[in-house]
Length: 357
Length: 260
Image (cartoon, rainbow over the protein chains, first blue to last red):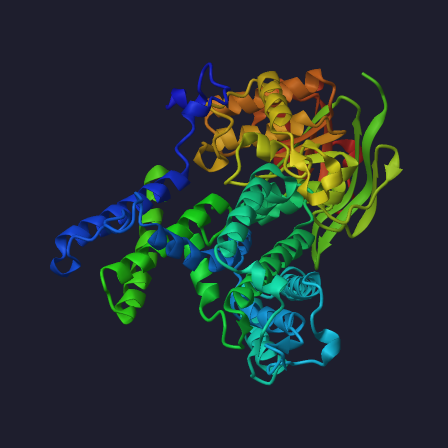
């Protein structure tokens, strides 16, 4: 008889008695991975004692290797924006496979309303529409792109919540539809030469700024608003959520709409950064976004995971990618190793969850 | 005790195809009254409750709740009307903590103009949770822990405390202590006493004779889908109730021709 389980004199909400947040483990993993690469840099004979993180070049006078840090975070920022939405979807025990192609479709559509009329004094060689669609204020392509994303999310959510199509199937269908839209929009031709304002959205470190700002906003939303609470409740026990008076269907539609709108925004940022839109953009983005969430400690069964976790997951993925390049691992090996790491992350997490219960 | 009738059923009947799971149940519950429903497995106890709470749609009959004829489309409907049900399968979200579960679907919020993004008033919900648990005598080591790490009894207590917190017009519990240990059962029984003191009416389905005799005012016995007895606690004892349950006795007013 475990009498102590009733906690005589209990009834507290003592913060110190809470178990450590999962995010701390991912942060530790991130540090360990950095240390491993740092050691590899010293040990591997062909590395000439280069440092992974710190600045060892004589001509610069800084502590960290800022260029590498910038690349690490810039590489993951755009997919990271998608991952913020995918995280919410997975917390409801769903999945969104359509985000990668949605990035491409949105990039095409938004860019076609963001073109300049003249390039170096000549008419825009990649012009898709007539002059009416040229040199529009930047708000127009952005709103059109985000609306398109929200609309795709509305369709995803409606099929999943109201027609009871499994999320995997519904978003797999949308995956193909969106790739089709991206190809059809301009007949497969790239769309280029955006206005200065549009090009600013994804210029320099702007993708990182968007990623960080959106991550903070959604972390707060998930933790401190009714929307966040209900998202977790639905993933944890959908029946209980329904019995508690939550409009589960409407809420799911909202979650898919937010996720797709975020993916659409990623498409805008990506096309702006590349100053061109192509139908093949965003390949595998949906899978990397899911991988970030998974490394960040999310449960595909729903109910568990966080935005902070996903941000850390994104950092882990970025560090690994950059680290592999740093130790001059060939691209093909990089993919194989990353696949292994994703699976290892899930195994570790499952083991940890089981030992905790 | 007031004589105001909280719940009344007239000729409540449920057939599953050819199976007459519930037949012509006439039942009354007065304000503040605690009534037990007893009977063998398959006697129609849970069926009776399911018709009232809208989990299933009745074949025939009337349900009058709070002075109005009602026809609930689902348990949520019933809950909105003020009937709280503690089901055998617990309706709790495993990954959320105690206050979250207590207030799920009716969170205390701030800045309501933010719509779905209105802020949760954690502080107030935590305080109310502590008060509710203190009032019901439920002891939980840390209310900020998620439900998944709690024992069956603690989970049951949270489910029941939720009911007790919101001052429903009627509480229905379907075998709340069936899976619990001695101590945990005592906690649940404490909550039932609290409800009694607060004058909140309760329907309790239970197999536990001691519990029923200790806590309830009245006992309704079901057998083969029919009510066969309506017994005031003071006028009966365990043996008597068992006689009705097993079919050795049937109260005269419930005698039906061709049915023993």
